[in-house]
Image (tube, rainbow over all chains, first blue to last red; front, side, top):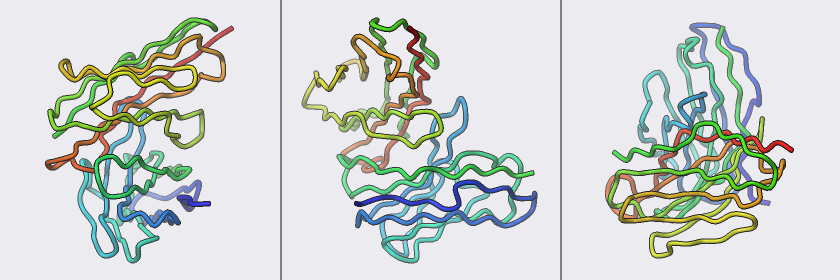
Length: 113
Length: 115
């Protein structure tokens, strides 16, 4: 069954440390997305990708990098984690075109202390 | 860019009552509209996808209305039951322009249906 798998499910990181969140999809979708979800803000787009080798800035990219080494994998990297990056992060995949809905992963809960 | 406003942020109804959630959007190129449901601690699941050519869309226990003139999208849960308790998010994408293929989400509505 086609799916989007995120790892880890939960992560505790120290301030200033490096954090990598991983996402793998078996939908063969071209597009992949990273969102963070915070109370009162809904889902906000951090980075997205149109295919292997491509990364684009979303609405709140500061403090984050992204990497798309293959069609299946899309990583979100926090080089110097800060407590303000404590959040739930969702990865999603979708086809090209405006009519494509997204398939979401189960989310990663990140706590930066 | 696109801005999506969703109301209300919290909604509490009795079992059997209806619950209405509304979103307004700004981009005139918006063409595809989505409603997602998120149960506590879980991921987002697609409820319905509608296109701007269709104004009324019915699902199991709910109706989605689209008013293109007012740029308003609503989700009406008829006869809500406790299993409908969840967070609901609208999302919008365009078929042309900078927002093509990118979903812009509303801030969500937390619905509680109590007996």
